[in-house]
Length: 137
Image (cartoon, rainbow, N blue to C red):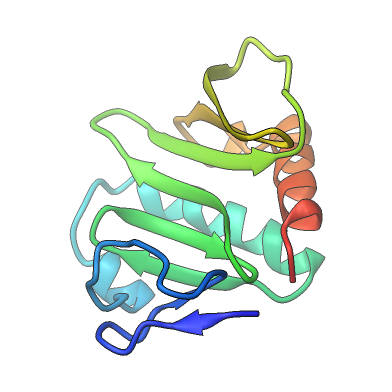
């Protein structure tokens, strides 16, 4: 079940989901500013996720969210890299994961750094696939 905020028109997996109430941007609006290295990374991530099935791409001021009924991955730019965050059941063991946070008993939020599109390799694509497939429709 999804809920659409009556103020910003963004969709969420839970009714009255707390959020920064601001309308989403278009992809072109979002990438009109920011570091040049960000968009090529985004394009590789988006292409992989769209190959799995329907995905909502929601650019907001702080980054780009990827959703089904709820967010399962996001990209946030930093000075020298893009932080990829993704939510999967269990814990991913990899030196590439820079931070982990349990968000529930069966969901863990992971962060990793992407410096170029080539960083979105088979390992990262497997994480994104698991995040997509384990996210509610």
